[in-house]
Image 1: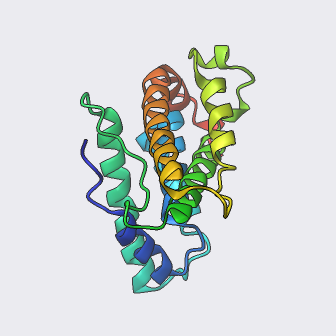
Image 2 (image 1 turned 120 degrees about the vertical axis):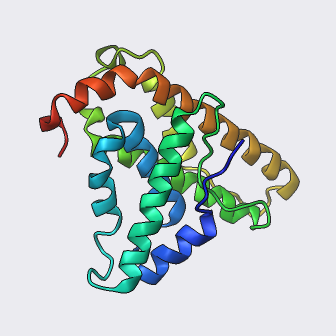
Image 3 (image 1 turned 90 degrees about the vertical axis):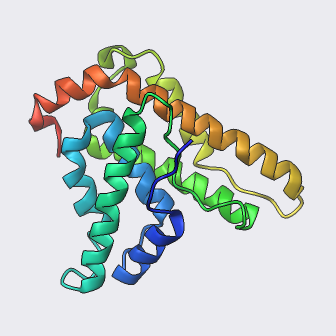
Length: 195
């Protein structure tokens, strides 16, 4: 599976230099929530929200904006790929397992926030979206957003469980993206739902 051309560390570095308070994983999660529910045309909301607390007139903010624009394009292409190329933007395996679990939890929090940012959570039930798995996936991501490691957890077992969770998130987001195609079309024809 292809990864985004913008790696986790480069996005994280660009955000930190710009003074943004959110982590790269959380930012990517929110992007994916917006893309799944509202499509590529609504990412201006995500971009402005992602850099809201950054120092607005600096070269670092412009660099962060460019990095996030590339991330958006890469992610949109991956989600639309027939080869199931989408991957959540997370630290690589050289990073401590506790930090990777924390990043995955932040990614899920970001995804849930992106759903809200796109206006999809205003819909009262999954049936209204015309999809089967929306509520189930959201419930599962809420649970994963609470993930963490206790000091007594075995790192090898935690690494295996983490890999399974990442694969679950990857597949669940890809499934939602495909199932929400009709909702994205309806939402794009009714921009008043976006706020």
